[in-house]
Image (cartoon, rainbow, N blue to C red; front, top):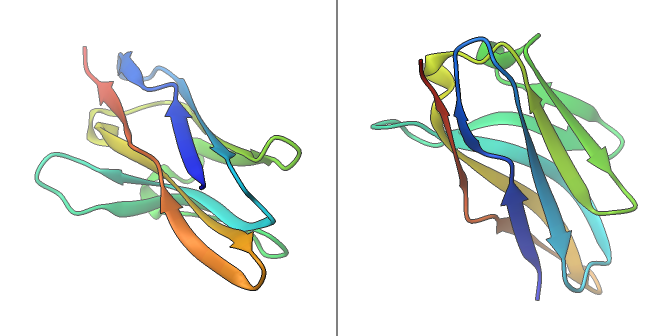
Length: 120
C-alpha cells in the first residue's frame, strides 16, 4: 500500500518562506510524476507545481519565480520551497504522485494535506 506523508506547513508572515516535504512509502516500482496542489478558503483545488520524469517542471503562473519544486529520487520525496509568501498563498497544500505499485499498474495518490497560513 502506498502512502504520501507531508510535512512543513505552518504560519508565516508575508514575505517569509516555508519548505514543504512529501515522502512516498510502501510498494513503489516507479514514480512518473510528483506535485503539489492547494485549496484555499472557498476555492477549488488547483495545481501549484509539478515535476515530471523526462519532461521537467511546471508551475502555476501565480507562483512562478517564488516557488521551486524539487525531488529526491533516492528517497521518493518531493519538496516545495516557497519564498516571498503572500496572504493569497494561504491554503491547504496537498501532495500528489503518480506511482507504479505493481506490474503495469500506475495510480494517482494524495497526501492528507498540510495547512499553510500567510498572515501578519
